Length: 200
Image (cartoon, rainbow, N blue to C red; front, side, top):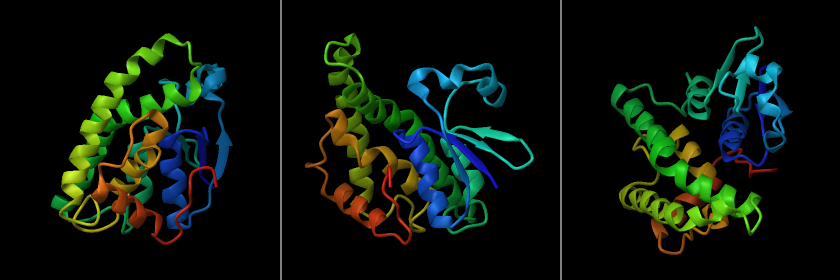
């Protein structure tokens, strides 16, 4: 059985929980206390020298890091990853967008607002993070005005990757009121078969 080393509060880790539930694939979850430094131990660094979660560990001991790379690996051969070269490239496009233009702002704002104390100096970053987070959500809003899911082929790992932090963007002070198409998309994702909420 595959093992997932992850932190339940992490949206990047939740991506894998959601996909695995929808694939109906069994796995073993290993909770890692990131905030306590558990990813910096020699044992963990031997599995992932970058010292981050999530981490997929296969039965033969091979390990794969980076949430969206793991999504691609797990979704291979399923309806969640298109086989058509153009649709697959569009799926990858949104995975790269999520990691470069979305997650660094939406997820980091959420982390600062949720996990750091009110007097922490990193709270000064929030206005800029929120501004850039809204820019990313505006891109999604424009795209979702023309189709139901991020890729024309239908629900895919592109939706899973972007849902993971978008649904909780308000926790970082990035409200969703101005994004009706995005909010409708969130509801469509949540209506998918075998959907599981974060922390469920």
